[in-house]
Image 1: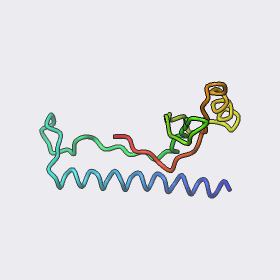
Image 2: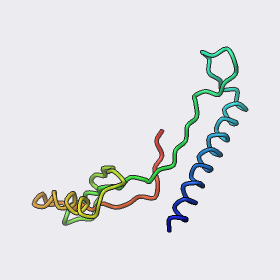
Image 3: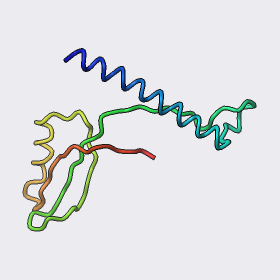
Length: 107
């Protein structure tokens, strides 16, 4: 199992590097450079980091399945912490559920 984790971490770094290079290449091909530097340097600086996506707190009315609100939560919550968050809304006539999401982009 430790070997699998080491391999995954190694691949993660490789993937991040490949994506950064590809993004820099596109910026260069499109002629997008840092206007404050006298040499042609891709702009904005490219840094790409893979990470575990956050959890999502989904809140709905109890009597009607309806998405009222979604709040992103840290990805490292324990099962106990998720249960505590879900139970905080008791008595407010809503249901809450913490779910994992497949991914997220930040623009």
